[in-house]
Image 1 (cartoon, one colour):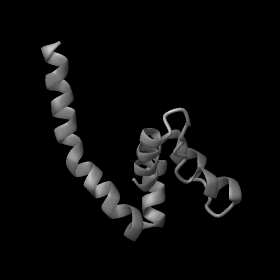
Image 2 (tube, helix red, strand yellow):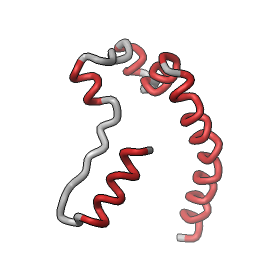
Image 3 (cartoon, rainbow, N blue to C red):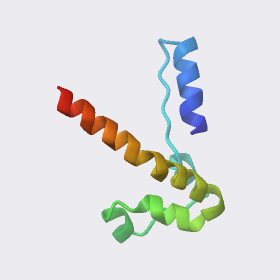
Length: 83
């Protein structure tokens, strides 16, 4: 969330500059963090793999996201039906 907030602020202050949120991409390139096994990546569950490695850091973030997702989905469906 911090990098997205920084990018949003930067976009407001420097509209002609691009911002990219790369998540753990830099850690993977630097070798500080290992990628999930191929089977986990193929199942599109790398987020769950990362949460299992850092539950105290990522668990609360993913839990908050899971709690707001149903509301966002319902609003999107309602918006879609109005169109």
